[in-house]
Length: 527
Image (cartoon, rainbow, N blue to C red; front, side, top):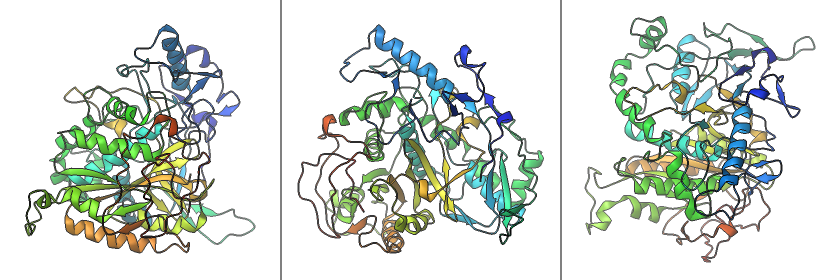
C-alpha cells in the first residue's frame, strides 16, 4: 500500500550530531515517518506488553524505587534516553497512502466517496481538522523526574489526549466545524480499483485533484491562506458556512492550549502524569488504554475550564445506564421528581469503554463490529494501536483503519503566547493500517450532549454491537448501577500490561462480578 522513498528522508533538528552521518537505519531498523513508526520498538514508543518502561543499554531510564527529586545518575540516564528517542522519532520518511475513490471512507461518523473534487475537499477538511497531539521535546521538566520529553514512553497518553480533544471539539464547537486554515493533503493518492489481471497488480492511479504528493515535514510551519488564496477559495465554494466557523477560531485555539506541555494546562502531559500517580504510574512508564481512560476522567473532573461535561468509564465491559444517569442528571441531586423538559439539568457526557477484542491478537469476528462503531456519529474514536505502538483510530475504509500517530517528536510550542502557531497540532498526511494488525486492547469513546442523545447512543451502539457473530458482544448496556472499583484503590504492584497473561473473566450480559478486589484495571474480558 505504502511505497517508501529513501531519498525522502528528512531530519528535524535537536538530535545527537554523531547520528547525522548515518544512513536511513538505526541499529539495523528502517527509520519510518511520523505516521509510520517502526512496529518493533525495543527502545521506546511502546504502550503494550512491557511494564518496565524505556531502556537504554539494559538500564532503566528511571528506577522504580526512585522517590522525590532525581539524583545526578537519574538525570544523566534521562538525558541519554531523551537524546536517543529524539533521534529515533525526529526522522521523517515519507510514504504515500492510497485511498480507493469508489469505496466510502469514514471519519468520525461521516462518510465520503472520493470520486469527485468536492468530496475529497470535505474529506480533507474533516481529517486535517482533528487535533494531532504528538511527542514533544524541551518542555518544562516533569515534577519528580528528569524528563523534558515524552519520546519513547508517552504515546498512549498522547492518544488519550487526542480522544479527549475530539470529545471537546464536538462539545464546544459546531458539529460540522472545520479548521479554515487546514493544510493541503500530502503524500496521498486516490485509486480506482479494477479487476485484477496477470499483467496488473491492483489498480490504476488517477489524478490527485491538484493535491501535492511531494515530501513535506509536518512540523514545518506552512503559510496560512489569506482570504484571497486559491486553496481557501476552493473550500469556501463548497462550504458557505466557512465564515461562520471562522468565528470559532478563538475557542479552537483555547482548546489546543488546554493540551499544551506546560504544568498549568488542564489536559497537558504534566497534569496527566501527575494524575497517573494514583494508579502507580510515573513519568517514563508506559500506560495502558484502560488506565489512561481513568486518568482522563479525573482530569475533566478536577478542571473548571470545561463546563457541563463529565466522563464516565465503563466497568467489566459494561455500561451501567443507572450510573450514567446519576452522573449526568442534576435533577436527581436536587430532589426534583420530574426533570425539566428543556433538558437543562442534564450534563453532557463522554463515555469511555475499555475492552479487549481477543487474546494475543484481534478476534476477526469483531472487525465488522468495530467498523460499525466507527461509523456512528456518537463515536469520538478509539485509543489503542498495534503491539508496542499506540495509535488513535478515527475512521476506516474497507478493511483498513484510518489513524493519527503520536510517534513523531516535535519541538514544544509555547501555548501561553496569544498567537502561537497551530500547524503542528494538525496532520495533513492520512495513514491507514489493516484491521488484522490492531492490538486487541483498546478504549472506545462516545459523546452524548443531551439525555435524548444518550438514549439514542444506547440504541445505536447496541445495534452496532449485535453485528458480531460471537456469543459475547464487545461490551453491553445494562440497567441499574454497577460496583465502584475506583482507580485510586488500585495498587501499582497489581497493574499488568494490556497484553500480559492474566486470568480470563467472562461476564455474560447482565451478570456482574461482585468482587471489589480486581487485580488490574487492564484485565479486560477475554472475548
